[in-house]
Length: 157
Image 1 (cartoon, rainbow, N blue to C red):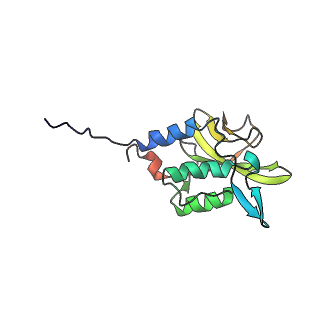
Image 2 (cartoon, helix red, strand yellow):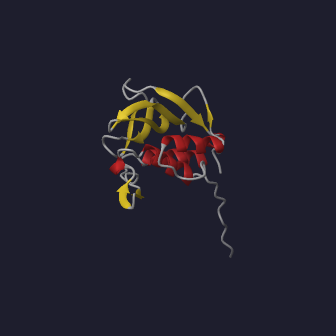
Image 3 (cartoon, rainbow, N blue to C red):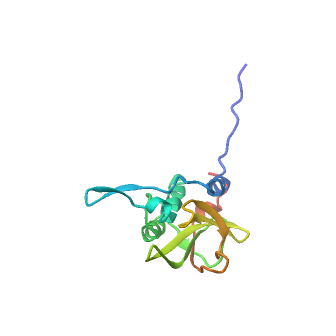
């Protein structure tokens, strides 16, 4: 007797959103090592500067970017080359870019994901882990750009 192989359809959008939500609390994106003048250094300062790395790892996992970056600017440039475009309103799964803020005495932009109901997920420079937070950080940080990719609208791979 033959056994039937079930027809499996991969749920792209749902899996993408679930990975983002399940990353909350992760310390996985804290470190990326490199050599500076021949000496080993943690380029992400133990999670202080990990927002772009976190976002890129998720986007790369879902083939929504060409490669992983450690900076917000590099991330945005690659996203645009890969078909991401600006939108005016927040949508579940979009990429959010917040205004610059001083971190470690230097101006830094911040990037993360919007997951709906006024909530976002990004790496916290103070907690040094991926956190769930209000999209406007309690009115302390303004959203300056929102990006969307048409594949996020596709439910099935």
